[in-house]
Image 1 (cartoon, one colour):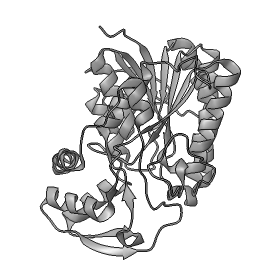
Image 2 (cartoon, helix red, strand yellow; image 1 turned 135 degrees about the vertical axis):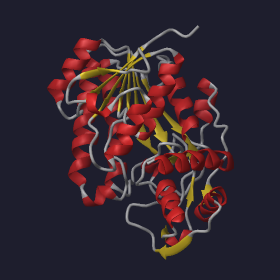
Image 3 (cartoon, rainbow, N blue to C red; image 1 turned 60 degrees about the vertical axis):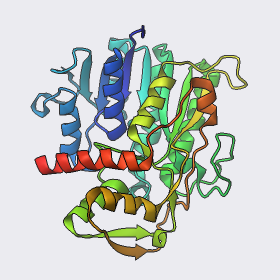
Length: 344
């Protein structure tokens, strides 16, 4: 029998945050979702995710808790993690057991255009979360890092033991900074923290600024897709259910106090089967039953050649193993994509 926990999920209107909230609720946990619902991408998609969780758009307003009409154990608040005082109030009022911190300014390429957004959300926002966890006796903080911290690492697969001193984007630098900040709080205040380095997540309700959605949308409309580095890229595409499975497993464990770094952990979460970009496009074409019009471009600033997760550490500790291959994941993703966009 699972012991019910009260968990704060930041970024709950986001792609992974939505799926994690749903999985926790179905597990029997009590969840408070928090998100500022910014307009980095279409807010209608964010509100549609929240509607799936039983929240109507008209009922959502700033700094007000709203109870789900679908899940009695789910409440949501529209709030920004950079608002320190408001964040302190909800922590004090709600008495969370654990925190899953997924709110962040996402996107590698956008970090070149708008660096200040990343500093505010990913650095200022993160230290606000750490401070609230520290002062409210949170039993475990789980937070999203990223495979981007590995930069142009030539050694594959990427291991948590690898040096990550050469980020090639500001986004990656903020994620590496989060790991260092969490390390210091774990050391100074015995706050249990676990950072999760996600590898290229795709699936239903995905972000429209990421390649799977951009490509699917363009192919459906007969428009050209932009293929960077002339297609000579590899990504460890990971289906969202495998990511969520890992997040939930990690959240309901606690860092081992006998380890060399007490209270602090880092894990890769990926599929461990990198795919060439052109093969990924082929799977998309098969699922959509339509050929892509391709425009070739050089490598983008901040991009990396390859990502490839070694997940042995998480497998040994918690039995984590990804089980959804690209073909199966792609069909599930495209079925959702067609359904959502034909309904819209």
